[in-house]
Length: 183
Image (tube, rainbow, N blue to C red):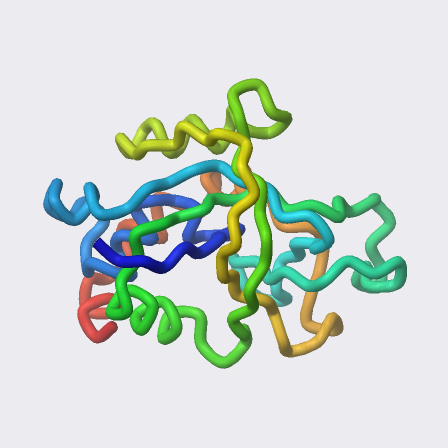
């Protein structure tokens, strides 16, 4: 079992996409699934936005002036996501390739969510549908996450995981296998 813990806040919150990136398929062997622990978590002090001309988000530290221009709706200064532990050095290598040069890895502190915490239900649904363990105990955990580095001018409105699941997830997990074989 690996000893890395990462906080995911975008497409990689879907276990099928994460498994595809690190194992090469959306439904890996049971022993591969068993190496990872998925827990809903929240990261305070950051904002999540859709990357311009993309289907995925980026996070940036929350500042009063970092809302992308043209956006009028209030944007949350906390990000709901998934804490995944048990990742190996090889998993991290493949995740770094997947994330590319648009992101840098940063150490953050997240709080796992307990039953009844606001926002857990929707995330719990996708984790449960994938048969993943997500029994958050409400503890603070030091993890690594990928922070968007290209600048706020490349960000748009707040990115929504539920909209992504509804409109894009099926296409992402059904993507051409050759794209994932090279990672």
